[in-house]
Length: 178
Image 1 (spheres, one colour):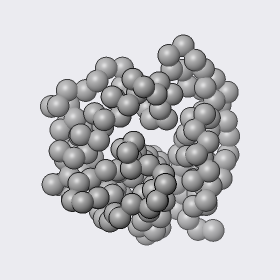
Image 2 (image 1 turned 90 degrees about the vertical axis):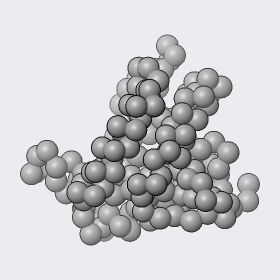
Image 3 (image 1 turned 180 degrees about the vertical axis):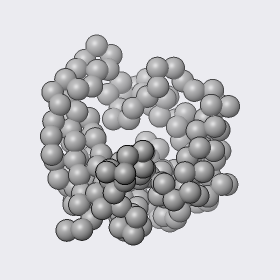
């Protein structure tokens, strides 16, 4: 696929409705692809719940606990990448967890790489280590994470269960001090 013309920028308040639409698109995609490598709640959230999620995420960004970037194509947000700090314990405040999701029709166009590079660059001023987990069946995602510097540090066999199938859960990290 050819690269999309996109911009990557920090998340803003005006992105709420586009991001809610993205999340609902993943719920629809899951019907055709039950092994879609995203975590889902037990039931589809209501619009009110999704707006509350955005409010909380954006508040975390404003407090400096989360770093979040969006990818925009033709004025519409098509993906989100965030790094959430683990501030609950002082001993782990230097570690963050990464999440990323891109609308199906915009994958394999360089957007994931652009989002990752932006968030990683911005995270270096706040965190020392970024962790993530990925479905063992999602080899493309794992390859992308490796390309930007993540390394495997463990696999939990049968760590994920979806539609009666048990899937390995792969854990990766990036030390920003290296």
